[in-house]
Amino acid sequence: MNKYVKYGLLGVVVIGILAAVVYFLKKNSTPLKTYETEQVVRRDIVNKVVVTGKVIPEDEIEIKPQISGIIEKVYLEEGAQVKAGDLIATIKVVPNEQSMNQASGRVRTAELALNNSKIEYDRNKTLFDKGVISSQDFNTQQLTYNQAKQELENAKADYQIIKVGSAGGSSSANTNIRATVTGTLLEIPVEVGDQVIQSNNFNDGTTIATIADMSKMIFEGEVDEAEVGKLKVGMPLEISMGALQDEKFNAKLKFIAPKGVEEEGAVQFKIEGDLVVADSTNVRAGYSANAAIVLEEKKDVLSIKEALLQFDKDSNKPYVEVETGENTFEKKELVLGVSDGIDVEIISGIDENAKIKIWNKLEAKSQDKGSGGN
Image 1 (spheres, one colour):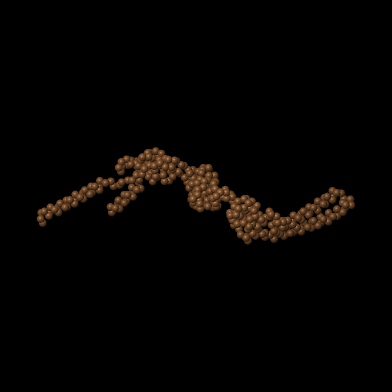
Image 2 (cartoon, rainbow, N blue to C red):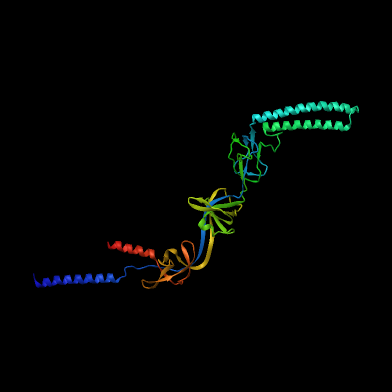
């Protein structure tokens, strides 16, 4: 081989080696990781708890019968506006045979007593007219006769009540089911032909209708035991309903249950809030709703994203790393304030010019570089 060719090949190899060395020197001189930063900002931070629940009338009145029987007729429909005293339904009485027999026997006994009393009355009246007996003796017999007539009327009335539910078709008969309050007829859970049971000391009775004043609505929900200690009666609520997504309603917390109920391993406390509803808004009973309760609020404070926080392994104190130069950072311990779960208030530790290292993006970049090298 010609020596010039050898020198040429050797030169090419040397140049290749020098180029490779320069490339690796440049690559190693570039930092492995370049961190992005985020600026501290001023914002309003609101710490609030969201409670799920429903909107219901403050008072729901159940109308129950005073006599057992069968629904004969229903005069109104659900959703109707009623006033106290309005007729809702009527009941057809199904009399008890034993009670009927006893009432009938009482009527017959009263008739016999009246007949006997009338005979005595007529006899004493004749004697009184002739002056044989005194007026005092006659008045006593007359009283006995009048009492016998009244007893017969009472027995007949009782018999009619047992038989048809009314002594004489009065508007207040037990067979007439009437509204006891003014409001909206929410529910009529019975139909014509249904058998109903009267309300008494041993039975709540069958509910004929449910009435409520829809102008007085409340929010009812449940709060976890971790949050209930932060609540106070009188706190404002902001209510949003699934059926009325474009509207917000104001309410005020009026009740916090003194006793919790365990549900699926967590203790829940019932709360209630008075709801302010405009006359033009149609809010129905049972709407699902969420109530936002403001626990703490700060205006125009220094804040950062909670995702930027780190915690010391030994002291568990929060800190961030603040940029001091190109890709150089310094650890700064922080004193934190109110948080809304996304942003957190910075009370001390850094100023508003600080630039905070973004940790999450750092790891994503290093993974990208590693995969690129493969």
